[in-house]
Image (cartoon, rainbow, N blue to C red; front, side, top):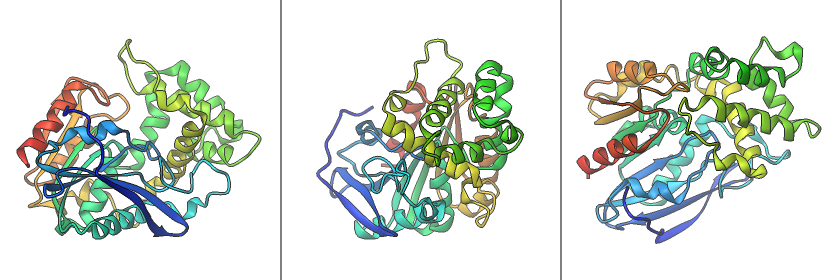
Length: 310
C-alpha cells in the first residue's frame, strides 16, 4: 500500500433528514477523482483507506456513510431514526457529495458491503462512474444474507448455535437479523445483543487459525453502531427490492471498466457472487486470490487496478 497521507480538505455535508456525513479529500487536488465506499453497513473507514491510490495521481475522496464513523447522528443511539437510512439514501448522499466537490466522473472503489453500495450507485449513475473496482464482493442478495446468518453455521456449528440461541426461541426459525434488530432496539437487551452479533461476525469471517477479533468490536460504541446498522439493512434485504437484483443488473454496466477481486477462501462471502457478477458484466475482469475476506494479496490486486486506471 502507499505511504500514509493526511487529507488536505474535509468537512460535514448536510444530506437532509437531520443527517450530516463526514467527507475528506487527500492526494492530488488536480488528480483523477476516486471515491472509497467502505464496508459494513456501519463499518466506517480508517486512514488506511487512503492508501490504495497513488496520491500523486489521484484525488482521493473518502466519506462515512449515514449513521457511522464521524457522520451524525450515530445510528447506535436509540433515538436515531433509521427509517431515513436506506440504500436509496446512501446513493443519494454519494451523488450529493460528488456535486458538492465539483466532480464530473469518479472511480468507485468498494469493499464488501461497499461493493454492494458501489454497484447500486453505478447502476443508477453509470455516466458518473469512470471505473468500478470491487473487492470482497457482495451484492446484498437474500441468499447471501441467509448464508452469512444461517447456512455458514454448518462450518461453525458451535458458534452459530450460540448466535441463534441468543434470540428468543420464537424467533429462531425466522430472520435472525430482524430478531437481533428488535433486541438492539430494546434498552434492556441491546448491549448483550450487540456483543453476541459481533462475536458471530468474528467467528465466521475467517478459517485462518491466526485470525484475531476485529478491534472495531472492542469499542462498545462502535460495536453498537455496527450491529444496529448491519441488522437494519440485512433485516430489510439491504433495501434493494425496488432496484432489483444487482447481479442481474450488472448488464447495465457494459462499457464501464471493472475489476472484481475476491478470495477463494472467503467463507463469509463465497466466490459465487463475484463469479456471477463477472459473467453478467461485459468487459469486467475477475481476479481470484487464495485468501479470505481480505488480505495482502487482495490489497496488491486492488492497487494494481488503481495503477492501471490512473
